[in-house]
Image (cartoon, rainbow, N blue to C red; front, side, top):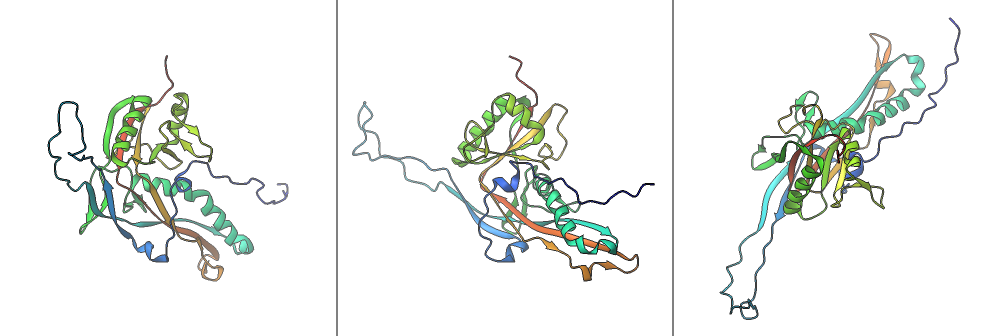
Length: 294
Protein backbone atom coordinates (compact mmCIF):
# COMPACT_ATOMS: atom_id res chain seq x y z
CA UNK A 1 0.00 0.00 0.00
CA UNK A 2 1.29 3.43 -0.92
CA UNK A 3 2.32 5.77 1.90
CA UNK A 4 -0.12 8.62 1.41
CA UNK A 5 0.51 12.03 2.91
CA UNK A 6 -1.58 12.88 5.97
CA UNK A 7 -2.99 16.40 5.68
CA UNK A 8 -5.30 18.58 7.74
CA UNK A 9 -8.93 18.51 6.63
CA UNK A 10 -9.19 21.39 4.14
CA UNK A 11 -12.97 21.88 4.38
CA UNK A 12 -14.42 24.58 6.66
CA UNK A 13 -17.59 23.63 8.54
CA UNK A 14 -20.41 26.18 8.15
CA UNK A 15 -23.58 25.76 10.26
CA UNK A 16 -26.86 26.00 8.39
CA UNK A 17 -28.64 29.38 8.74
CA UNK A 18 -31.98 30.14 10.42
CA UNK A 19 -31.39 27.68 13.25
CA UNK A 20 -32.78 27.87 16.76
CA UNK A 21 -29.86 29.46 18.60
CA UNK A 22 -29.45 32.12 15.91
CA UNK A 23 -33.13 33.08 16.23
CA UNK A 24 -33.82 33.12 19.98
CA UNK A 25 -32.88 35.99 22.26
CA UNK A 26 -29.76 35.73 24.44
CA UNK A 27 -30.29 37.59 27.74
CA UNK A 28 -27.46 37.97 30.23
CA UNK A 29 -27.18 34.85 32.35
CA UNK A 30 -26.00 36.58 35.57
CA UNK A 31 -23.84 33.68 36.65
CA UNK A 32 -23.94 29.89 36.19
CA UNK A 33 -26.87 29.09 38.50
CA UNK A 34 -29.33 28.88 35.58
CA UNK A 35 -27.84 25.45 34.87
CA UNK A 36 -29.80 24.17 37.89
CA UNK A 37 -33.01 25.28 36.15
CA UNK A 38 -34.91 28.58 36.27
CA UNK A 39 -38.32 29.89 37.28
CA UNK A 40 -40.05 33.07 36.16
CA UNK A 41 -43.41 34.78 36.54
CA UNK A 42 -45.07 34.73 33.17
CA UNK A 43 -47.59 37.47 32.42
CA UNK A 44 -49.74 37.03 29.32
CA UNK A 45 -52.13 39.98 28.90
CA UNK A 46 -55.30 39.89 26.83
CA UNK A 47 -56.41 43.45 27.54
CA UNK A 48 -59.84 45.00 27.00
CA UNK A 49 -61.49 48.34 26.19
CA UNK A 50 -63.83 50.69 27.98
CA UNK A 51 -65.27 54.18 27.59
CA UNK A 52 -66.30 57.29 29.48
CA UNK A 53 -70.10 57.34 29.52
CA UNK A 54 -70.12 61.15 29.77
CA UNK A 55 -68.19 61.49 26.52
CA UNK A 56 -69.26 58.46 24.53
CA UNK A 57 -71.72 58.79 21.63
CA UNK A 58 -73.54 55.88 19.98
CA UNK A 59 -75.78 57.73 17.55
CA UNK A 60 -78.84 56.38 19.32
CA UNK A 61 -78.47 58.02 22.68
CA UNK A 62 -76.11 57.77 25.61
CA UNK A 63 -74.52 54.37 26.30
CA UNK A 64 -75.10 52.69 29.62
CA UNK A 65 -72.58 52.81 32.42
CA UNK A 66 -69.51 50.80 31.35
CA UNK A 67 -68.90 47.49 33.06
CA UNK A 68 -66.38 47.31 35.88
CA UNK A 69 -62.81 46.77 34.84
CA UNK A 70 -61.60 43.23 35.48
CA UNK A 71 -58.22 41.54 35.58
CA UNK A 72 -57.09 40.54 32.09
CA UNK A 73 -53.45 39.58 32.59
CA UNK A 74 -52.88 35.89 33.17
CA UNK A 75 -50.04 35.25 35.60
CA UNK A 76 -48.34 32.03 36.54
CA UNK A 77 -45.03 30.48 37.50
CA UNK A 78 -43.15 28.88 34.64
CA UNK A 79 -39.88 26.99 34.64
CA UNK A 80 -37.24 25.49 32.38
CA UNK A 81 -34.56 22.85 32.79
CA UNK A 82 -31.09 22.60 31.31
CA UNK A 83 -29.49 19.87 29.22
CA UNK A 84 -26.00 19.22 27.88
CA UNK A 85 -24.77 18.51 24.37
CA UNK A 86 -21.50 16.63 24.12
CA UNK A 87 -19.07 15.07 21.65
CA UNK A 88 -16.56 12.42 22.75
CA UNK A 89 -13.96 10.48 20.83
CA UNK A 90 -11.05 8.16 21.42
CA UNK A 91 -7.65 8.57 19.85
CA UNK A 92 -4.12 7.31 20.19
CA UNK A 93 -1.64 9.30 22.29
CA UNK A 94 0.10 9.97 18.96
CA UNK A 95 -2.61 12.59 18.33
CA UNK A 96 -2.00 14.22 21.69
CA UNK A 97 -1.24 17.70 20.40
CA UNK A 98 -4.47 18.05 18.40
CA UNK A 99 -6.90 16.27 20.71
CA UNK A 100 -8.40 19.36 22.32
CA UNK A 101 -8.97 21.19 19.05
CA UNK A 102 -10.51 18.07 17.50
CA UNK A 103 -12.92 17.75 20.42
CA UNK A 104 -13.93 21.40 20.15
CA UNK A 105 -14.47 21.11 16.40
CA UNK A 106 -16.57 17.97 16.85
CA UNK A 107 -18.85 19.74 19.34
CA UNK A 108 -19.24 22.74 17.04
CA UNK A 109 -20.44 20.47 14.24
CA UNK A 110 -23.14 18.67 16.21
CA UNK A 111 -24.41 21.05 18.87
CA UNK A 112 -26.89 23.00 16.72
CA UNK A 113 -28.73 19.88 15.54
CA UNK A 114 -28.63 18.27 19.00
CA UNK A 115 -30.01 21.37 20.73
CA UNK A 116 -32.83 21.60 18.19
CA UNK A 117 -33.70 17.92 18.52
CA UNK A 118 -33.87 18.24 22.31
CA UNK A 119 -36.02 21.37 22.12
CA UNK A 120 -38.43 19.70 19.68
CA UNK A 121 -38.74 16.29 21.36
CA UNK A 122 -37.86 16.98 25.00
CA UNK A 123 -35.45 14.07 25.00
CA UNK A 124 -31.86 14.15 26.29
CA UNK A 125 -29.86 11.02 27.03
CA UNK A 126 -32.85 8.92 26.01
CA UNK A 127 -35.12 10.42 28.69
CA UNK A 128 -37.92 13.03 28.65
CA UNK A 129 -36.11 15.63 30.74
CA UNK A 130 -35.94 18.77 28.57
CA UNK A 131 -38.58 21.34 29.56
CA UNK A 132 -40.16 23.16 27.91
CA UNK A 133 -40.18 21.58 24.46
CA UNK A 134 -42.35 21.81 21.35
CA UNK A 135 -43.89 18.38 20.66
CA UNK A 136 -45.91 17.99 23.86
CA UNK A 137 -49.47 16.87 24.56
CA UNK A 138 -49.37 16.85 28.37
CA UNK A 139 -48.64 19.45 31.01
CA UNK A 140 -45.73 18.88 33.37
CA UNK A 141 -45.83 20.63 36.76
CA UNK A 142 -43.19 20.73 39.49
CA UNK A 143 -44.94 21.97 42.61
CA UNK A 144 -46.68 25.15 41.49
CA UNK A 145 -44.29 25.73 38.56
CA UNK A 146 -45.40 24.76 35.06
CA UNK A 147 -42.43 23.27 33.24
CA UNK A 148 -44.32 22.10 30.15
CA UNK A 149 -47.42 23.42 28.42
CA UNK A 150 -49.58 21.51 25.94
CA UNK A 151 -49.20 22.31 22.25
CA UNK A 152 -52.69 23.33 21.16
CA UNK A 153 -53.45 22.04 17.62
CA UNK A 154 -54.88 24.82 15.46
CA UNK A 155 -55.02 22.76 12.26
CA UNK A 156 -55.05 18.97 11.92
CA UNK A 157 -55.37 16.63 8.97
CA UNK A 158 -52.57 18.05 6.84
CA UNK A 159 -54.15 21.22 5.43
CA UNK A 160 -52.40 23.12 2.65
CA UNK A 161 -49.59 25.19 4.09
CA UNK A 162 -51.11 28.59 3.28
CA UNK A 163 -54.30 27.79 5.17
CA UNK A 164 -52.47 26.15 8.06
CA UNK A 165 -49.87 28.90 8.46
CA UNK A 166 -52.59 31.55 8.27
CA UNK A 167 -54.58 29.86 11.03
CA UNK A 168 -51.45 29.37 13.13
CA UNK A 169 -50.38 33.00 12.83
CA UNK A 170 -53.90 34.25 13.56
CA UNK A 171 -53.97 32.26 16.80
CA UNK A 172 -50.45 33.42 17.63
CA UNK A 173 -51.48 37.06 17.12
CA UNK A 174 -54.51 36.58 19.37
CA UNK A 175 -52.36 34.93 22.04
CA UNK A 176 -49.21 37.05 21.92
CA UNK A 177 -49.79 40.20 19.80
CA UNK A 178 -46.07 40.50 19.12
CA UNK A 179 -43.40 38.89 16.97
CA UNK A 180 -43.31 35.18 17.72
CA UNK A 181 -41.56 32.16 16.31
CA UNK A 182 -42.75 29.61 13.74
CA UNK A 183 -40.80 26.37 14.21
CA UNK A 184 -40.56 24.17 11.11
CA UNK A 185 -38.50 21.15 10.09
CA UNK A 186 -36.19 21.79 7.15
CA UNK A 187 -38.31 19.44 5.05
CA UNK A 188 -41.00 22.14 5.09
CA UNK A 189 -38.81 24.94 3.71
CA UNK A 190 -39.25 24.09 0.00
CA UNK A 191 -43.02 24.06 0.53
CA UNK A 192 -42.95 27.45 2.26
CA UNK A 193 -40.75 28.83 -0.50
CA UNK A 194 -43.01 27.45 -3.27
CA UNK A 195 -46.02 29.13 -1.67
CA UNK A 196 -44.01 32.34 -1.16
CA UNK A 197 -44.58 32.14 2.58
CA UNK A 198 -40.97 32.67 3.64
CA UNK A 199 -38.59 35.51 2.85
CA UNK A 200 -35.30 36.87 4.15
CA UNK A 201 -35.70 40.28 5.77
CA UNK A 202 -33.21 43.16 5.81
CA UNK A 203 -31.54 41.71 8.91
CA UNK A 204 -30.94 38.35 7.23
CA UNK A 205 -33.67 36.58 9.21
CA UNK A 206 -36.21 34.20 7.72
CA UNK A 207 -39.73 35.56 8.26
CA UNK A 208 -43.34 34.82 7.33
CA UNK A 209 -45.62 37.31 5.51
CA UNK A 210 -47.01 38.28 8.93
CA UNK A 211 -43.52 39.10 10.21
CA UNK A 212 -42.98 36.19 12.58
CA UNK A 213 -39.52 34.64 12.65
CA UNK A 214 -39.11 31.20 11.10
CA UNK A 215 -36.86 28.73 12.92
CA UNK A 216 -35.79 26.01 10.51
CA UNK A 217 -34.19 23.49 12.82
CA UNK A 218 -31.76 20.91 11.48
CA UNK A 219 -32.75 18.75 14.45
CA UNK A 220 -36.47 19.46 14.19
CA UNK A 221 -38.29 16.21 13.42
CA UNK A 222 -41.72 17.39 12.26
CA UNK A 223 -43.44 15.06 14.74
CA UNK A 224 -46.89 15.55 16.23
CA UNK A 225 -47.57 16.82 19.77
CA UNK A 226 -47.93 13.23 20.96
CA UNK A 227 -44.48 12.45 19.55
CA UNK A 228 -45.63 10.30 16.63
CA UNK A 229 -44.01 10.81 13.24
CA UNK A 230 -46.02 12.81 10.72
CA UNK A 231 -47.55 10.89 7.83
CA UNK A 232 -45.63 10.87 4.56
CA UNK A 233 -46.03 14.13 2.68
CA UNK A 234 -46.94 16.08 5.83
CA UNK A 235 -45.24 17.73 8.79
CA UNK A 236 -46.19 19.39 12.04
CA UNK A 237 -45.11 22.97 12.67
CA UNK A 238 -45.30 24.91 15.94
CA UNK A 239 -45.67 28.52 17.06
CA UNK A 240 -44.48 30.10 20.29
CA UNK A 241 -44.11 33.55 21.72
CA UNK A 242 -40.65 35.04 21.89
CA UNK A 243 -38.01 32.53 22.99
CA UNK A 244 -34.69 32.92 24.72
CA UNK A 245 -31.77 30.77 25.70
CA UNK A 246 -28.73 30.50 27.94
CA UNK A 247 -25.65 28.45 27.16
CA UNK A 248 -22.44 27.84 29.00
CA UNK A 249 -18.94 28.20 27.67
CA UNK A 250 -17.71 25.00 26.01
CA UNK A 251 -15.93 22.58 28.32
CA UNK A 252 -13.09 20.48 26.88
CA UNK A 253 -11.54 17.77 29.02
CA UNK A 254 -7.89 18.15 29.92
CA UNK A 255 -5.43 15.76 28.38
CA UNK A 256 -4.03 14.63 31.72
CA UNK A 257 -7.50 13.58 32.83
CA UNK A 258 -8.40 11.85 29.56
CA UNK A 259 -5.88 9.04 29.34
CA UNK A 260 -7.41 5.57 29.62
CA UNK A 261 -4.43 3.58 30.80
CA UNK A 262 -6.19 0.23 30.36
CA UNK A 263 -6.32 0.72 26.58
CA UNK A 264 -3.60 3.37 26.25
CA UNK A 265 -6.04 5.71 24.47
CA UNK A 266 -7.20 9.25 25.09
CA UNK A 267 -10.95 9.84 25.62
CA UNK A 268 -11.54 13.49 24.76
CA UNK A 269 -14.81 15.17 25.69
CA UNK A 270 -16.26 18.52 24.66
CA UNK A 271 -19.63 19.67 25.97
CA UNK A 272 -21.86 22.68 26.50
CA UNK A 273 -25.00 23.17 28.62
CA UNK A 274 -28.14 24.85 27.27
CA UNK A 275 -31.47 26.09 28.63
CA UNK A 276 -34.34 27.37 26.49
CA UNK A 277 -37.71 28.93 27.26
CA UNK A 278 -40.55 30.73 25.49
CA UNK A 279 -43.44 33.04 26.34
CA UNK A 280 -47.18 32.46 26.61
CA UNK A 281 -48.19 30.70 23.39
CA UNK A 282 -47.70 27.08 22.36
CA UNK A 283 -49.57 26.19 19.17
CA UNK A 284 -49.32 23.47 16.52
CA UNK A 285 -50.51 22.91 12.96
CA UNK A 286 -50.37 19.92 10.64
CA UNK A 287 -49.42 20.89 7.09
CA UNK A 288 -49.30 19.15 3.73
CA UNK A 289 -45.96 19.37 1.95
CA UNK A 290 -45.77 20.15 -1.75
CA UNK A 291 -46.06 22.92 -4.31
CA UNK A 292 -49.24 24.79 -5.33
CA UNK A 293 -51.22 23.05 -8.10
CA UNK A 294 -52.81 26.19 -9.51
